[in-house]
Length: 359
Image (cartoon, rainbow, N blue to C red; front, side, top):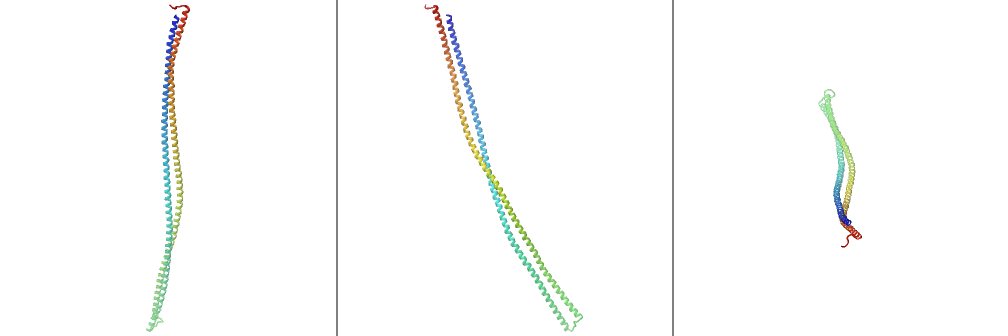
């Protein structure tokens, strides 16, 4: 009987400790599942925060790339505009150079016309000087002829006067063979000869003056010839200057063409750079769309994964709780089983050894 009671007591104690153990194990399992779920939620929040941080950083980098692209685009546009202004400037320089060359050609033409006019003037001056020189020579010859005729006439007048004087003296009965009458006549003839010499001298002086004026005209003619020669040299110098201006114009045009070609190449490069930057901007936008899709996909995956893990850990916690209660039931039934087993053993023992029995 004591053995049966002890078995019952041990069964009850087993039921109590088994239930307590099952409750404790179920609580620890639920606590562990809750801790794991909390850790998972914290990790998921951290992952979302990192995703958001990465997305913000990506957007900042994207904005910086857009701003840099826009700056480069503006810079390329400014370069194209600058090259366009340079091309216009070179065009104006070419127009100015062409204008200067045209003016140089007009100046050369004017110089040629002036030289031709000067040649006409010089020819007219030379012809006039030659005519005046010939006129002076004619005047000198006329003076000489006039003087010669005057002296001849003066000689005839002298002869006539001497004859008349001799006739007068002879009529007066004066002997003119010798003595003072002859001296008087001789002196008279000498005086007339002296007057004739003076007339010849004056004639020579007047003729010399005319020929001197002729010589001055010839000197003036030489001056005109010298001026004509200098005018020809000036015209040749003008032609050389014009040829030099032509060479300078060609050299200037060559430099302008080279600079314009380089400016056109720079403008073409700037336009090409703009095209590349526009393509880069498109690629940046496409990459941004792809990165945004990745971000959204990762975020959805993180949310789904967190929900799945949370459900798994929630189910684990519930399973731990149910398992604890099942363990309690199992312990209870094990205790009952032990109790009834002990009781059956005690009854069988009592019946076998006739202990107790019906009253």
